[in-house]
Amino acid sequence: METHKAHCLIFPYPMQGHINPMLQFAKRLQHRGTKITLATTKFVFKTLHEVSGSITVETISDGFDEGENGVAVDTYYATFQKVGSETITELILKLKDSGYPVDCIVYDAVLPWALRVAKSLGLRAAVFFTQSCAVNKIYYHVYTGLLKLPLEESKVEIPGLPPLSASDLPSFISSYGSYPPIFQLVTHDQMKNIHEADSIIYNTFYKLEEEVIDWTSRILPIMTIGPTIPSMYLDKRLQDDKQYGLSLFNPMTNACMPWLNERSTSSVVYISFGSIAEVDAEQMEEVAWGLRTSNYYFLWVVRESESNKLPKDLVKEISDRGLVSSWCPQLEVLAHKSIGCFITHCGWNSTLEALSLGVPMVVMPRWTDQSTNAKFVTDIWKTGIKARSDENGIVRRDVIRQCISVVMEGEKGQEIRKNADKWKDLARHAFDEGGSSDKNIKDFVSKLIQS
Ligand code: UDP
Image 1 (cartoon, protein in one colour):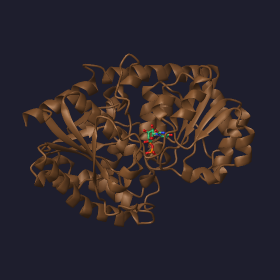
Image 2 (tube, helix red, strand yellow):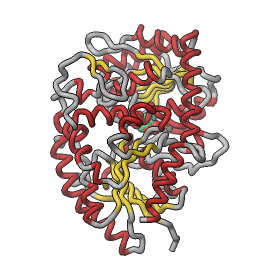
Image 3 (cartoon, protein in one colour):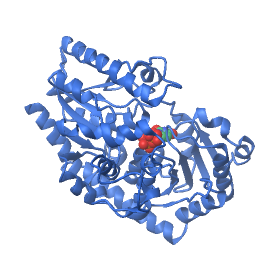
Image 4 (tube, protein in one colour):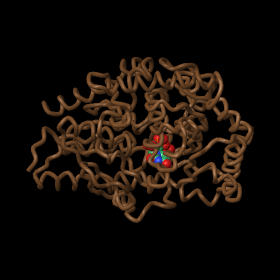
């Protein structure tokens, strides 16, 4: 039997944007001698690609082993809590019987009931927040009642954050009342028991959100561990475990990477709206026209479930300059020298990945925390510009074409690239031996071993 100093059970919400960062954190713990088991639902397990590798993946049930299509969000949460609590307990007992007792559950903040499971079994509990410190601070402000809803002012002042207008806030707040179960989860349920957790982990790095991290640290003992990017992408000298992600979609590496290898430096526009956002047909058409008129090479990710909305004739017409892929190995793509800019929905992982790999962005936020991330990209880190939508919420072709040209060419583009290089270096420093995130991970493991 292998000997390990401690055993962590990693428990992400079963979605791409939650599994990726928690898996990368797990690998950092493993690198420091911790045994890792990752728990996911039976349904998600069946859809995972790249499951082989050094991390053991075990399944639990959320009560919907054949998928939860069409189930109301609040029903899903309640069922997951009930069935998940039972099945994760069974998994922990099974691991104990096999000679691998779990010492700590690292659970996703949006599965707050996992804390009770850990405590009832006498285990340490570490809560992992997959969103930015700024976004968590906004939710915490709502939780404590300091930010009253519906909003009374057009500008919101929160300590540690720049003044924010309503449209910069997460959609659950700016469109207060439109997603009650998610609003309840992010502004209340995920906050109410964090004081009982043994560790509070944030997927960000100190320099990136210095001011709001300092403010948050006055009320919560948070530790920053980001960027959760495999080391081989941050430092080409390092050889990482090839299994960098557990993908819910087939990443078509064999099509995308050889195609990019044929392109010259900084000549390609990469477009992706992540794993959940739905883009309507009209917006797809505007993107396609924007690409057509901008004349650059492009790699465009359109998930299979979205592909029926693609303007097929138009895409065919420009296919000599572009590749449409249903999913790509995004980190490999962003790290590729041919990529000149990233048109992104600003999911927190995509934002952190682009920042850490020094890729300039054109931001097109859709919902949830993306508007807040976009605000920081354009106004604070200054590594991108915003493609603004019209009064119908559509970003028009001319705006897209113009944003691409600003970022790919000209003075403003140069300034953005300079800033992007600066953040790439700072991300590297946080992650390097002795950097802020590296130190926090080391401390986390020391505490685990001593407990
Ligand atoms: N991703 C990927 N291939 C793609 C598109 C996205 O591997 O074609 C990954 C991306 O690297 C990121 C995650 O999927 O880690 C998406 O997370 P994010 O927070 O950016 O957006 P979400 O999908 O949660 O909206």
